[in-house]
Length: 212
Image (cartoon, rainbow, N blue to C red):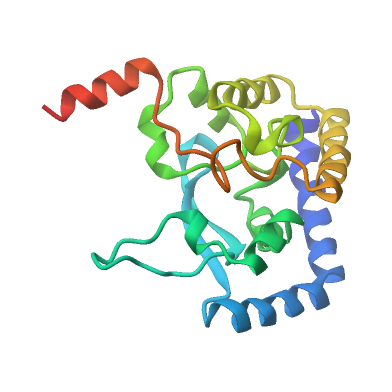
């Protein structure tokens, strides 16, 4: 009942009110991003949503567009600015994603939308994370965020999909607020964000076989 009839209208209402209340803050952040990182204020990237349907995720930019001599983007840790780190530590870069919630592409709570290139790497269980709309926050984010291994992260995503409840969603929302205030789990053990997902042993083997 909750997942089918209540969750989406609730999410749209909360996202709309939050955007309205935080509009002065959003405007201020946009100006600071423009000053610190240049004219493109928003980061827009294709991500898979419910049932794997592609949509465009909106966030505030936190990185420069610096490239090497071959025209390739430099690693994240070299492009992430001090200002960008501050936005990420407070999760302020995520605020434009409220627009995705209003558009029906995301939910307040659900598995985080990952990269399109990961889609062929999932096994049948991991692919079930796309049975629901992706979330602004999720069970994995309040259980360790970027410090989790991919195996742990996907297990928590699927656990959420198996039990979507009003109480569970609001527990995750309140825990998210606590995590943000403590700036907990922003980086992984070896990267400024999260190491790329390379696939499971079977998908990695198939990828290697295709390369021959």
